[in-house]
Image (cartoon, one colour):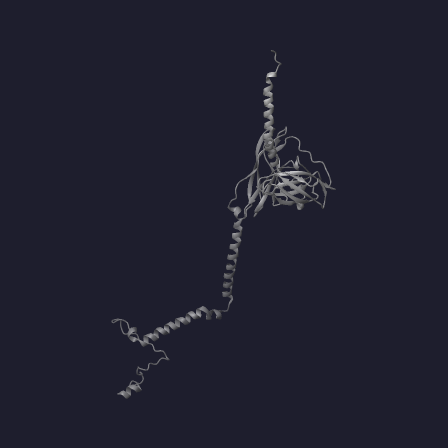
Length: 369
């Protein structure tokens, strides 16, 4: 019997199609869950004028995360906010905290950003792992301009997450400027090498816009190759709290990294110590000045006069005791005649006869004889 070519393969084809269908059914929920985990947001309306408001609803965010919502100009979902938060209406931004399922709903006032449209509603995490989402939004009556063209030649992109290296020293505890190194890996996705790329590093405190400074990295990144970048980041003296470090290249923000800085308790201890030492020193100086400028008579009648008076009283007490008890006043035998007692002018013993009248006796004695 003659068989048609390929007919013996049909059972394998049927079984293969069935297995593919079952795999699609099994993997489709997982793919849907992976897509749902990606942070995103929707707007109650795609256009609005200044003075109005829109409702922003987000899904797929980290539970109990603090987010910041801003209307930014010169931006697109594909290229992000080109000028960073300097292109956003920061004064009219709103903060929101996600729920236990990573969702939120919050009203956002419509404001005109400092840069022309195209505009987006930019949503980003404030602390923790960095996550962002941009939703297209049109601000009615706001100027519109084309986005700047990307720089020709090489194109750098971040390949791994950034981290801060380094630690604070003892001087930082006393208010010295905190410093770290921000480390990240970039790859050249263009067709030409990038030599000595110039990055912009910005630090921001809270919801304020970052202050940008140029940082040049010396080296060459060949097309299709990657390089590890290290940039120095430094804050002002006495800085403490939650900071955000961002890096831009060719007008595009590459990374944003949170930085928590502890309070310089050494400065607080120094001021407390100063509040105790200075008043004590001023008090001692004041007492020394008062002691120098007060009159001499006052000093004579003060402590010195009291000390001299105590010495006289002790001498009078010792002499009086010697007159009343001559046996104790006399020294040991063989030391010579006992010392002559000194009689005070106002002291006259009643029991002793007078030297000027030896025959005179006490009236009581005469009567008894």
